[in-house]
Image (cartoon, rainbow, N blue to C red):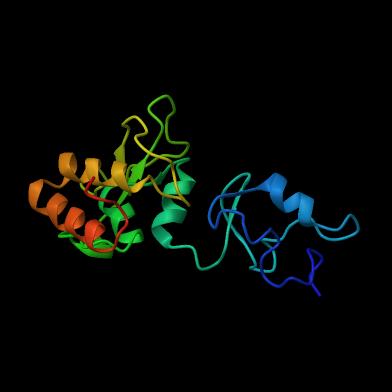
Length: 168
């Protein structure tokens, strides 16, 4: 079997976050005599050094993590399962990057007429970050500023109906 245990494809505890697993968590799970690169067998993806994800992680989250960011705005709203009035998965990934940091890789297209890979948001954290994405309140706040009132209210109504936020 794989050197990181017989528990299957997840070399970390069931209570660990699904995305953005730190290398220290994986190292604790590896046997001393086993391999040290669980990405080799396709069990984990590495969007950037020191961060590992499961193979079923969405491409949007992988893209955001590669910039040392998290999915934001409408991209995060789709990840939460909210209604969005945008271009869907064909829209560029909205990525939140801490205002005190910068993305770690070039985010512009080499051809000046082509759009960059992401739309970056750099606002202060409003609620806890969650599994490769900003919190739901922050995503809604970003949508209001970035996508406009209609898109915001569609997502807000969806979040209320799904019980992801309350009206109180």
